Image (cartoon, rainbow, N blue to C red; front, side, top):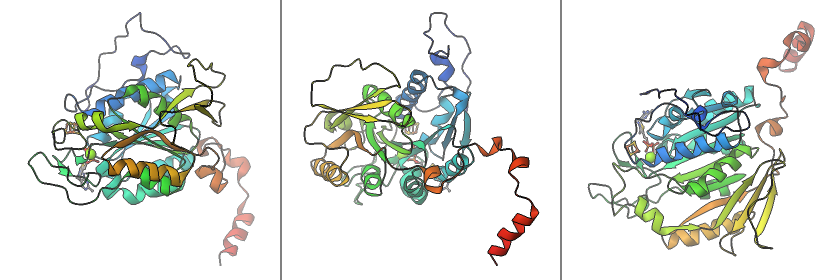
Amino acid sequence: MSYISKPQIIHKGLKRNKLGLTIRDYEGGMSTLCAGCGHDSVTAAIVQAFYQLDVQPHRVAKLSGIGCSSKTPAYFLNAAHGFNSVHGRMPSVATGANAANGDMHYIGVSGDGDSLSIGFGQFAHALRRNLNMVYIIENNGVYGLTKGQFSASADVGSKAKKGEVNEQPPIDPVQMAISMGGTFVARSFSGDKGQLIPLIKAGIMHKGFSLIDIISPCVTFNDHEDSTKSYAYTREFRHRAIHADFVPPMGEITAEYSEGDVREVALHDGSRIMLRKARSTYNPENRGAAIEYIRDHQRRGEIVTGLLYIDESEPDLHGINRTVSTPLSELNYADLCPGSDRLSQVLDGFK
Ligand SMILES: Cc1ncc(C[n+]2csc(CCOP(=O)(O)OP(=O)(O)O)c2C)c(N)n1
Ligand code: SF4
Ligand SMILES: [Mg+2]
């Protein structure tokens, strides 16, 4: 993967967060993506989210597969741990890492090709296990890196740059995630950082699998007027159903909400998500109704955005498997070792 490091000069006037770090401490290498690529706006939102949450960069593990989208982790959090895996295989690496050390923030960045074709099975099982991670799909409807083939998220009737028409129905990761038991499912647009940054912050703090499907246009292969994943189409047809404000633990609620229009969801660490409905009929805590609403708008060519489903009550991978919360690297094996007699008994149990 190409990587160009940025000069390390930090302007004196830059604001510092509670850890004394500036936004520069949350950046990565210089992007080598095409100028105007939506993926770079997603990078900027991720940088802001971790900076605003005062997360120590070395407490984060960033993971990806293969694609232009999967290059994103190289452009944020220089000091984080990172693993650039094989095409579509990021979820299994994230599962292994999280199983060994659940005491970190995990963020995976994938593409519509990476997650919805070759990696579909892996994606579905990470979701099903409620793996505690933020899972971002930078969704542009094409395989950008391999030069513009339709991906599994291309809409029926959408035209490629050279005029071919897609005739196969798309896979919608949001509908799939809500129907499969996902506990945090959101959709946004790379050009809407006002919506995106609080969603990423809430996703980081949700204890479980946080899927954020982000329409992130590919300016080189899929931003023309016949594409339904272009900047122009997404701006015109996005339908903001619900807005999520993130409030940190003990944080003050600064926005003004009129009575009855906001629903508060408490997260495990004491932070809160304030869900503000833009449309009175939307219910982000009812799976069936959420899917129906999204489908209904999809039939009209509209893209529903916001925190579309949340359930904070389900256990994550560690909760389901009742595994130890201490990272395996910190366990004192000398004290824990049950001895060879006990081990023989366990082995006998399998005979
Ligand atoms: C096993 C394997 N199969 C195929 C490829 C070729 N390949 C590389 S990236 C890619 C698709 C990328 O599309 P997407 O995930 O949507 O990312 P984008 O580039 O659009 O951001 C493909 C098919 C590969 N690298 N490895
Ligand atoms: S080819 Fe498309 S997805 Fe890839 S960097 Fe360029 S604009 Fe972005
Ligand atoms: Mg793509």
